[in-house]
Amino acid sequence: MVRVRFAPSPTGPLHIGGVRTALYNYLFARQQGGKMILRIEDTDQTRFVPGAEQYIIEALDWLGIKFDEGVHIGGPFGPYRQSDRKAMYRQYAEQLIRDGWAYYAFDKPETLEAKRKEYETQKKTFQYDCNTRSTMENSLSLGMEEAQRRIDAGDPYVVRFKFPDNIDITVHDLIRGDVTMNSRLLDDKVLFKSDGMPTYHLANIVDDHTMEITHVIRGEEWLPSAPLHVMLYKAFGWEQTMPHFAHLPLLLKPEGNGKLSKRDGDRLGFPVFPLEWHDPKSGEVSSGYREQGYLPQAVVNMLALLGWHPGTDQEMMTMDELIKLFDISHISKNGAKFSLDKAQWFQHEYFQQLSDEEVARMLEKQVKDHGIETDHGYCVKVASMMKERITFPSELWDTCCYFFQAPTEYNEKDVAKRWTPDMHIHMQKVVDILNTVPFEHDAIHKALLDDYIAANGLNTGKVMNSLRIAVVGRTVGPDMITLILTIGKEETIRRVQKAIAKLKVEN
Image (cartoon, rainbow, N blue to C red; front, top):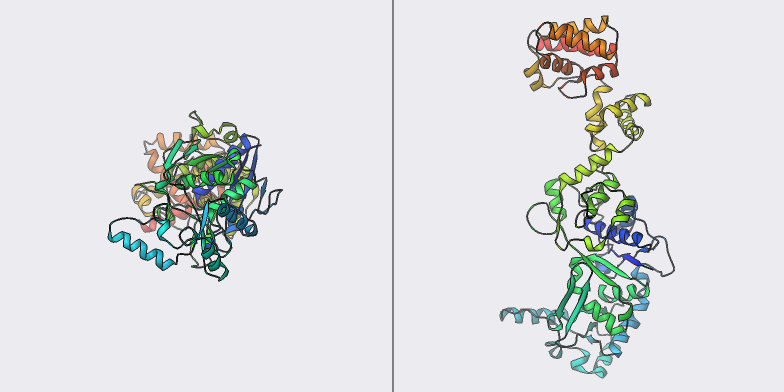
């Protein structure tokens, strides 16, 4: 049984790079008929942010990324929050010490800082490793008897992993192939702290093993830690059940180099979080895809193709199609640049797939929010006519407002370009035509465009755009005759007569 996990830390809002990691885990699990687990990794209590855990759960639920087990639903391998599991980690740290794979270290922060500065003066970088550990205060240099005395006396300590000297460690990655690193390049990472909490590295390995995780699909920023994780599996004797690793490429900023950040979103005007985030400490509000009106299926489709391709030219894919097509071997090794234009393209395409009824309900709410009573059937008719012009729900009122209320002012540039001094004569003729011909498309078209405009050698663009200014307030909108038929004869005549009076005086 394939078992994957998404294991975020509750240190703030979930970045869309993290969402993509969750999505790839979900697609792989579903395609393999496996299980998806949500585990909260809160070992670093100093960085815990209230509300972050619930935010993560709500964001993934909005996007349709479902879990089989997790902190919010339970399961047979719980608890699924690391702070609720902390009693179990100490025994594993002590096992590593007994087996010679780890040691106690008592070095004070100021001692470590002084050592770093000493190395800097020699233009070197200090690393706590096989070459330096014997010069530091730890159970290897002091002896276990002295180490135990210090522990009994309440001296603060950490447990560090003991890398063997000068061995090559190979990590097999499903995306990158074999990645090999020599142990002399690696520092003896802290695994356990005297406050009783493990660090990410120990808790991560213990939890993945005890939760029977078969595949670890995570961001490439964890690739440098992978040799330590492989060695921890070896140290515990768990090599035969070690999960397969896949390190995903970075999500890159739209321009320049580097990882996509909140600053990029703020600067270029797009969200980097799935939901709006209210920082409980600073009070700062960060925008979210949901609140900006993005549809969850558009966000999912967009993110899926940032670093993975289906092997075809197909771009629009439902979640079920993504599950069917997903293949880890089609994930790129290179970072994927985020594109706001592409995100908006997906949003527009998915908005067009909404039914007229769905769009009408959004429109009807906005109309009523503006204090206007309207008929649902009328909103459906307007939605059907205008949907193709819409990308975000927030555009509905501005795009469709003239179907519900007459313009109170007229775009100055449009008036200057189209409304000539004699235009009131032509607009009056429009009123006369509407009052005399049958109120249906072909009759109005023939009487206005053929029998009047064409027969009198008038400029069609000027006359029809002036009529649009009178009805809409600016030169935008659908087919003019269709618009007239939609808002009705009386309303059209009222608007035209108002424009004649107002613009004739102004001109």
